[in-house]
Length: 107
Image (cartoon, rainbow, N blue to C red; front, side, top):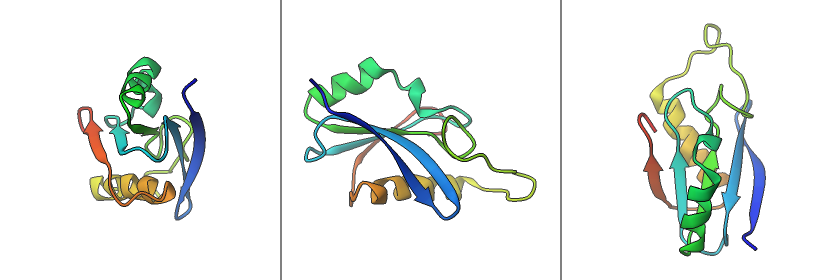
């Protein structure tokens, strides 16, 4: 059976929901969904297949999507640079210095 786990990674005052598949000791693959879409739009079957090929797969919800923190954009606007930093914070939350990155659309 494939190991899966959900983790919340903290970024400043934000909480970013993540889910991982496979062996944490294997090379990591970070899946970044397009803007305004939660990470679960990466199908479980897709994540599982990559993990079964020998990778540690991580998908996550951007801020303002899915199970991650909501942000009042008018009071606290954020940029693409902030979203890119969130991806690095997810990697830091897993103790990973690097990962293969797969993005969809703006991801």
